[in-house]
Length: 132
Image (tube, rainbow, N blue to C red; front, side, top):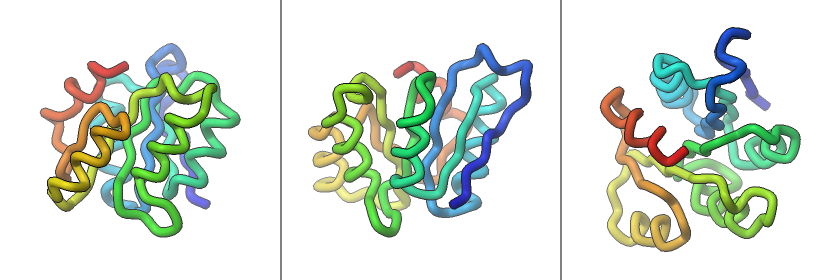
């Protein structure tokens, strides 16, 4: 399991975002872009780890997740979040390297706030953070 708490003690009061991506580079880029906006980031490499973090942490304000991952997709994670009374209020943003209209519709209909085609860019961050 690859879980990392990124940020420093001075960002304790900053909003907390959970980044979920099985690709190290994409997880790193998303985390760094968020940190530049003074966001506290917890980064994990899969939905199962994300659900564990969400069970243990009560201050996550937004989930930014990849769609294509082994074991569970970002859509599966979205559904688990939306079906949980404790988590259903959390905004979920899904990112993917593929712009597939049926997938985008499924995610948006399932309650995702947005579907972003990778690579995530600095210009996406303010919009993502507007969902908090």
